[in-house]
Length: 208
Image (cartoon, rainbow, N blue to C red):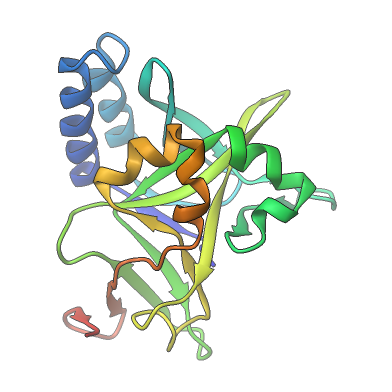
């Protein structure tokens, strides 16, 4: 699962580069590359369920960066649904329309998970400064709310948790957001191996 992640200035710079590339190709709104990364810098830190976070959406006019709230309203007062299983998301009436028509990418510098000993572990990529997590969103009276999709943990996560975010490569973002035919393919793919760092460790290491 994924219940907390981190955004920072380095992530903002990478998103700025991505948006500048899209701006030059006419695929984002005017000035978007300069405006939203600065907003990310002002809010850098841990992101929790029910909080606002930057997400990437897409449609026929291109890719867009906006702020959405993390988690769908739950069935209990104050509760939120912030993860959904990629393997069964198309079978759930509550999620089906969103994943078919309103997909989203959630950028993060890293995310956290807790092991059975309640130790906080940080997971990140050692080959890229940013994680792109797949998700979807629904509309509510107070605006759009997003959910992060999870999948079975790969070798880099299994010793800590049996679930992990569904992670996309940068070159897959546009297809995930706009290509309905490829949706099922991405829902079943195995994420890249991640590096991990516990609070008591001096340096991260990679599972091979």
